[in-house]
Image (tube, rainbow, N blue to C red; front, side):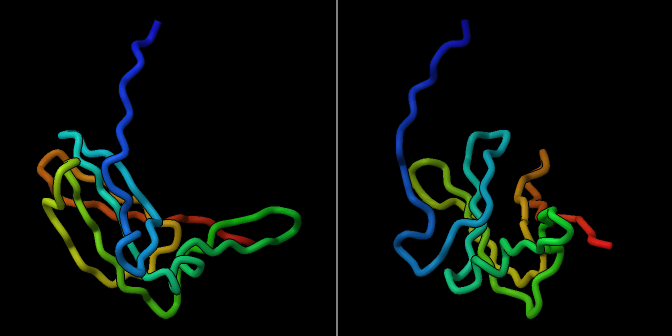
Length: 110
């Protein structure tokens, strides 16, 4: 049987600001990465297109949006990185050396 781990609510990314959390992950060291965008941009960042009965993620957002990657260790923010991106449905994660990778959706409709 898999042991149950305790869950503790530590922080809600973006609630104190006018931001929305659009991507999150846990790093190898146990910190949490959150990708925050302005609430007004969230629907554009997570936009979908419907075609022939299927739904696809948009691949690009135009015009680009401002975003902030926040790394939180459960007690405090340990790193913030501001960027401008045009990626839709972004995913955020770290490499073993701590560099941050932000990747977007890739889909096409013909």
